[in-house]
Length: 153
Image (tube, rainbow, N blue to C red; front, side, top):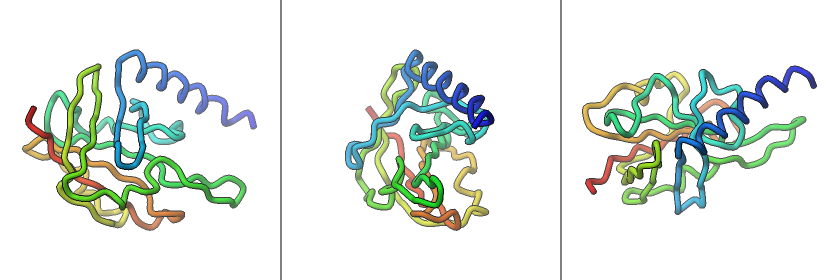
């Protein structure tokens, strides 16, 4: 059990920073409202969301990439996690990213299912988009993703 502790500490620190800076993800249709963590890698991520450091941020435009878990596996038992129902999102659904206390509302333009090696999903974009993905339901062979464009305020 001792090995888990550094990840738990990293998680708690990242959650505290997200709350202090005002960084959160809201997807009303899926009843998701989670802090957005800034981490070097996904290991400390639990039920929150993670903005990958090699993507953009909402204030800069481009491709902001947020990932999260779709399921948890504890001792061979599976349970739903944050992005389990991501495939239920439809064109026109809204997603709000609060970044450094400012709200950025995005409108879903597309969704799909890709393989882990389909890294084009993380390519930089000229326009301000939000890419959200998580693993397939109870398997790590696919990624469910949603792509949304910034709604002009």
